[in-house]
Image (tube, rainbow, N blue to C red):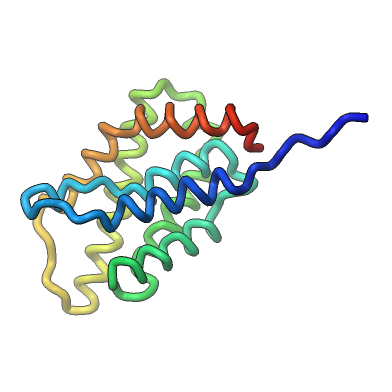
Length: 162
């Protein structure tokens, strides 16, 4: 008798919970603009690794949770992460075969798009706009991508997440 492989949904949920916790950890004022968007990084990884399980709906849900945690306009991060998830799922077959440094460049573009959508919605709402430093988070996320990729891939393999 063969057993079906464990799906280990809890690993995906725990990684998103950790990302949301890291998103609200207080940082010094000078470092705040360079806080990586942990939720987007984790979302991009899972959307590339398991596009049949983590997609637009997951991005929307994680974005809503992020909106509530940060006290942002409800739906702001949800829209941004849903767009990022859509693009990651749509391009997953291409991005998965890229070397890690090229994946990092693609992640930079996805994270910059995320920041751009959030800034656009802030502008529509009449909130004060950011400056060039708001894209520091995308650069930091790009630099952290190899570490995030290796860590989450190790978890996925260890717990046989499929």
